Length: 361
Image 1 (cartoon, rainbow, N blue to C red):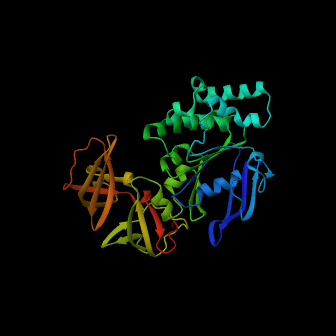
Image 2: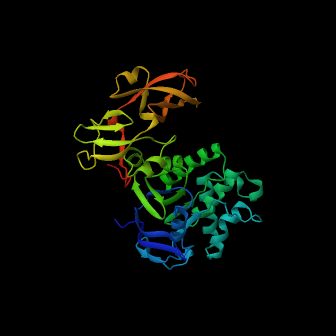
Image 3: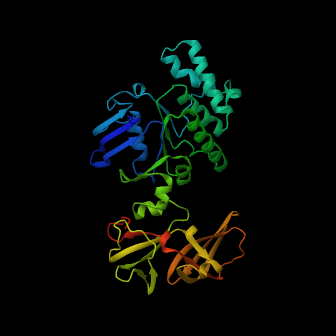
């Protein structure tokens, strides 16, 4: 099947600053792809190149099999939703939704049908006669999504659309966007720096850094088998725990600050363990405590430094053998700073990275 979007050797520079670097990407028909990364990684720039809002320095962009590298945004068959809503304040919601269609010269009956259909899908029918000033943040964002929806676009592009909303509204609209994708099955590319949005919405996530895609995979693949240490640190809250040490391939152990961990059960990418300096990473939720720690392959005693009760679970920052570690515990556990805690983990659930390249071993 022809990919919905194909990006070949894309580069973008502003003077001597290379923002995107020889980037290649294919997005399947009906796929929900999330571009994830910290500020300045190039994710919004890539989205703007696809939309035609920025002229590329090199490379090609194909949408629906057509080379649109130099096409105007209106000719690309896209609908775009911005972080800032970008609604016309003097127009009603219905006016905002229909404005682009009127300019395109569509018949009045078709415009009305498209506006009503989008309003029904987004549940904003009662708001059609209101102006943006009379809407809440969530209602304004729904109206902005509706304006993209009425275009009957092949591809929808979202540029951090939930960043201006409070936590509850973000969670509610995140669900609505996922349901919208399931209902429409259009190709969607969504830019965010929020890993929860990425993990919950995406079919695949492209993690970006410095104008490059470091890993492109499903949320589960990225969470369980991060391609490098940066991806491992970026995904997960709190971040992954890291031990700085060295692999002893002969003994089948990882040695860190005088303690040896067995590596039994860990699947190395090359099939066998290399000897040398490495980072050993284990997620806080893969740590066990108390009685469970007694039967874990790796065990240590820790002192609790900080407790963060979250209701559903409890996060504890602990000091163990010279390491500062985060452990995710049961939400109702009775624990306080200064307590002693037995902790442990199974190295089979770890992620190990080369010390020099930081690539997964």
